[in-house]
Length: 56
Image 1 (cartoon, one colour):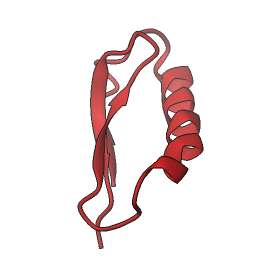
Image 2 (tube, one colour):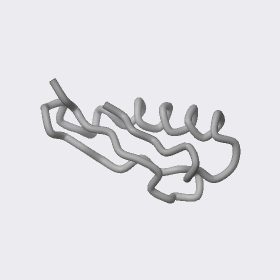
Image 3 (tube, rainbow, N blue to C red):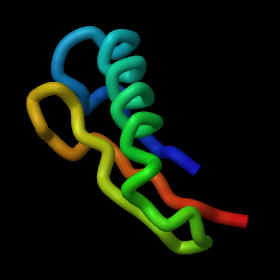
């Protein structure tokens, strides 16, 4: 599950969401893909705008 508050992102929400998804996908190799694994989602200003979590 990924939850992003688009009202919190810096700049264009569509561009920021695309950037966040690319960054997240590129870094999946660094995480254990197990239930409960979670991390903050950051915008281009390195502000936490949401989270992602592995769920069943």
